[in-house]
Amino acid sequence: MSIDTTFQPKGASQAIASGAPAQLNGGQSGQLGVTTFRVVNTTAASATTRLSWGASAAATPVPASPGPSNILIPGNGVIYIEVPCNSFFNTSGNVDIIGGQGGVGG
Picture (tube, rainbow, N blue to C red):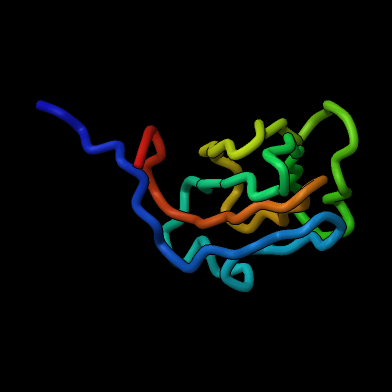
């Protein structure tokens, strides 16, 4: 028996730029059944970027260095993270984020 772990989007993708913390789907990700976020680094010139998340816009600064609640995304990289569905996101570059379920691939 196998389990389907392919990422299944549950809403629209949202672009997030540095210094503009935002919640996906107007904060309604929990009602859509979101358990995972797929994050694509869209920063120009294949540059790395950092992604941070927090419980409010004020608690989600632009991530400048390694620390709690932030992660490095390589140039043109794609990551899947499981954080609370109502999280705010911010970045040191540019990313596209979509909420869904699963996330080992796809």
